[in-house]
Amino acid sequence: MIRHREVPSVFVQSFLLLALAACATDAGDSAATGGAAAGDPPAGAAELVLTNGKIATLAGEGGEVVSALASREGRIVALGADDEVSGWIGESTEVIDLGGRLAIPGFIEGHGHFMGLGNARMILDLTTADTWDDIVSLVGEAASSAEPGAWISGRGWHQEKWSEPPDPMVEGQPVHDGLSAVSPANPVILTHASGHASFVNERALELAGIDADTPNPPGGEIVHDATGRPTGVLRETAQRLARAAFAEEEANRSEAERDERAREQVRLANEELLRKGVTSFQDAGSGFGTVDLLRTLADEGALPVRLYVMLQGGMETLEGRLDDYYMVGYGGDRLTVRSIKQVADGALGSHGAWLLEPYADMPSSIGLPTTPPEEIERIARLAIERGYQVNTHAIGDRANREVLDLYGRTFADHAEMSDLRWRIEHAQHVNPADIPRFAELGVIASMQGVHACSDGPWIILRLGPGRARSGAYVWRDFMRAGVIVTNGTDVPVEDADPLASFHCTVTRVIEGGETFFEGQAMTREEALRSYTWANAYAAFEEDLKGTLEVGKLADITVLSRDILTIPADEILETVVDYTIIGGRTEYSRGS
Figure (cartoon, rainbow, N blue to C red):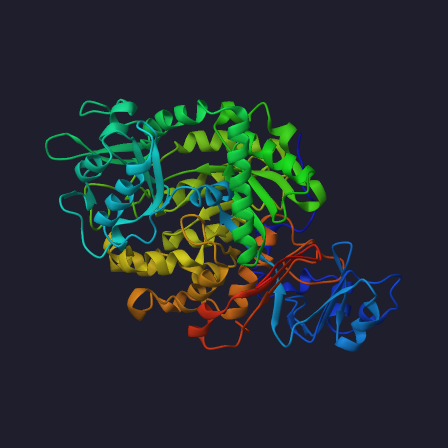
């Protein structure tokens, strides 16, 4: 079964973030400029009207700005000047006086982990730890009140962000002795901020069956000290050894307890995203069970944030079930499942990204492929035959090249298909020779602006100055080549805040006030489009969202300051005042 849309091939499109005229509907253009759509007498009152604002529609060639907007039944019905839209106000209309504030198309998170965000709010938060000793103290405090044998979990540690190195350490990372001392009766698993490594204590190693003689699994590494003893660091697929033991505790819960916990994760994720102005979220990898839950919640009207979910799994998991799970705009455009996530390598921070040349700070390693390219290609061919988009995690330059190669072979064997919009997730470090290939193949660079500032202080250590300059987070080089570049946070790897990622995208200011190759920064308009229209395009949803036009979904974020004009250092002081989804105010600051 082949599903595709007959629209112009992205293979021949130039970079569209600055030229949206081709995407703007005639009705949207007319309304945005105060034309007939804004002035026509309404057939009935609007449910929501925004007035007295600076509404950046991002529609049309010039990205028209209007002062008022009306929506009914979840869609925008009018845009224009206040007096042109006032006729839509009725007795029951919610009217919001923006007081000159900036309203934009709702932020779309281009790559994050929805359930992971909720889960991160239910376990130890390690993101603020200043040293390894801080983390040991947090675990010790948790162990003091935990039942013996209960697992303690946390996420967010990053050795490059500690103020001092751990002592002792192996390959820049701690050993488990201190952690094991404060939690002798409780197994502990602490996930790296990137998600591509975990740290476990002695009890967890025992339950996982890991000792000095345990071989590395394919695509993973068990780190050992000079004597051959496991240090507690498990890279990439080696994490699965400990997670299998951890999963036994989850299996012992009742079905009702598991459902309650999953629903709480969804609730917490939605709550945080709404507070941060996110109206749609692209979930980078979930299983069929999670989709079942999300579909149920959509039926219950319990999914305020719209979700685009990438299915994740191996060939055996996916092959027999894809047709049953393909859905577009389910539950009133709350849930879409039309893509498959694959993982080609690990992360730069954990030395897991697959490189063409060795790491500058670890010459013995080029990282590793977490999934053999031939396996990814098998799944890619299954996906294209079933009408699914493929979105593959690739961070290192070798991984990016391998994915481009296998995409190219798959496309060549299906030349009858166009507008595939396959993606490479992250594309953090690429060889300059491969940048034009993204454009030639129509592959979207699904990137996360905030990573450049978060990783900037240590990227040169990993890659050396030459490779960092020519291939790391090269947004502008991609854009010059005609590649669609999207934006996001990879939450819970980073905070879900779009404003922090927007700030990095336009400044590339890193810790200490320095800039990380600022010539690769986007303009503010480009950055906003990367967080709205480009993300909608990358999910085949640009006809529904990403710009504010008559007929599109009334998904709107209202900000306390005008991030398009204020001094750059004030962007991080900006907050979300309203998050509106389908014309309904889902979040209002202070209410």
